[in-house]
Image 1 (cartoon, rainbow, N blue to C red):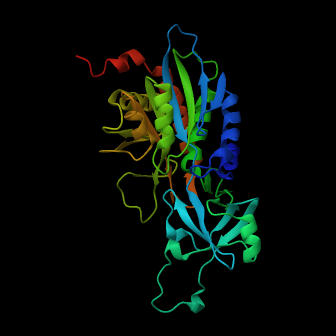
Image 2: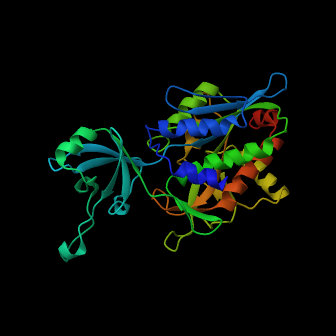
Image 3: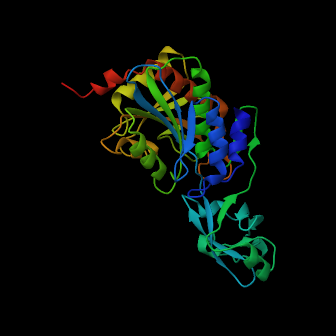
Length: 346
């Protein structure tokens, strides 16, 4: 599973251009699902059919898109101006390595003014002042690159230790791996509901894929996997979790109380490392879109602690990925849709 995470991290698939990851993820789902397909926007949807009569529907979901850039202009000299797709921090861009998806994939760098040429009052450049340099003269660049071409970060994922990994796109390719771990552990288990497995597109610009899929599937319940903030010296203490400390279980109005309580009790009963997280409003994840889609869907959010979110060196502890996968599996085994449906009834 670590190798699969590293492989997924190395792929492109920025929001709106997820086609480079849909087929690899569909193949991963196909090892466990009865059927796998994609919709018109690129959401990958697999299903494991129940043998029960009149089964309900439960959805497991994580998003597959990552932040990136898009070419917005080409100068006479061949430098590429760009716009962000998703929450890109301009502070991490100078010196970044990128792949520009033109007529072919072209390696490029985002340059930075050398300190020798900076004035004493030099401040960090704004994103609209930065350019991508792919090395070719202007006329060649304009043959190979067009406005609107996507750009993804090129840094390869690395192991810091055997368990601590660093790379781009762990938000939320790690969530996909947790779901795969869950499916692996569910093999041979007869669930009383159809289990839909979803890799959703366009979370970063607005939780779009999750909305599309939830409207389509109309599940009775949904489990969403995403990342949360890992511990760093400058991160503060609120909703910050130590790497290697286990799955993070969200509580709050975005989360159905039966599901969060069930996940917490399951983690305690099965000795799965975990922490509760108090989310007083919108969690900022696909769980929000899922909850309010159609007539409303009871949702659970499980998260993987991640350092340096939305950078090219996102860092996690693989034990947490495994803990979320195992907690998904064990909670699904104990899920009772009839009890869930009666939670708010007199």
